[in-house]
Structures are given as structure tokens and as C-alpha cells.
Amino acid sequence: AKGTAMYLSVKVGLVASEPLVLGRLRSRFGFGAFAESLSRIAFSYLGAYGNTQQQHSCGLARVVWLITYLRSVSEHLRNGLERRRKQGLPDGDAVHTSLRRALAFADSELWSS
Image (cartoon, rainbow, N blue to C red):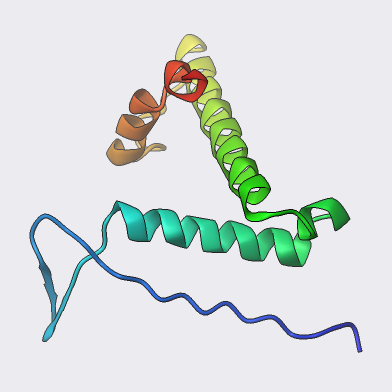
């Protein structure tokens, strides 16, 4: 046996400025639920696939890892898009409008404060 099977159980509370009606179910999903979902995913990922130090790290270390990872990914994507623009390559359809806005909002000043 390789070990105990791990299962992720996520309880999500949804919050929105205007309630969404999904069939007969009214649900809300806000920032708190989104942050909790990301944290649970990171905790599960590090617990299952991380190295020994990551698997045994405390919650604060795992959240710091998540923030560092998100910063790294956003910087990499932003730099890639900038390189494409400088080379005159099209990037219009490759990046969703919402992602463009998020990258513009999460500039390097946001991460350094």
C-alpha cells in the first residue's frame, strides 16, 4: 500500500452583490469563499505533492507559498505578453479580457507593498 487515500471536501459559502439564481437555488460566492477555496487547494496540493518540508509546514508557510506562486505566475504571464507585444505578435484572442484587467491590477507595486 502506498499510503492513505486523500479526499478534498470543500464547503463553499457564496456571496455576490446580486444573488444569482441557478434553477431554484440562490447562491452567493464572494472574496472570502474564493480565498478559502484557493487556500484549501494549495494546502491539499502541498500536502499531497509537496516535498517533505512543504508537507509538514504550517498553514502560514503554505499561504506564503500560495501568494509567492500566484505572484510568480502573474509576472511570468505579464512578461510573456509584453514580449509578444514588443515582437509585434498578436495576443488579442489569447488572453481573456478579465485576465487582462487582473494583470493590470496586480502590477509589481501591488506585490511589493
